[in-house]
Image (cartoon, rainbow, N blue to C red; front, side):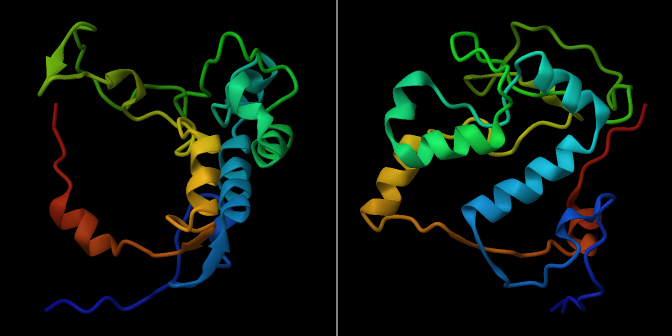
Length: 164
């Protein structure tokens, strides 16, 4: 059995550094930390000003005041709700993977999403926020999130790295 010894959170950005494993966070706190992290890259700011979204919120979802609040807080005022494009950029200006992909490639009946390989993109960017709040109302899910660390040793031993 491997016991993880917590040695602290090592992010390259400071927005999660104050957390300890099993801290409870409201969804808005999680989103704020995540947004602050990706917004610290200049390319993110450029894409936001060009109308790209942090949270994918469609016009029909804006009837829920909680969704409208998230949209106001987390999406840039320039977003084009009729032409939604997610924030997606290479953090340090170059692609992490050298392999080229056929855009029509299908793997296990799923499209190949290589366009986001190695890119920074909002992790909550494709949620249906109206549906999320309906599940909260019904008690199916909670606004609270538990912060957990994945020990580096687990990542190191299980990540498959392709060498070129």
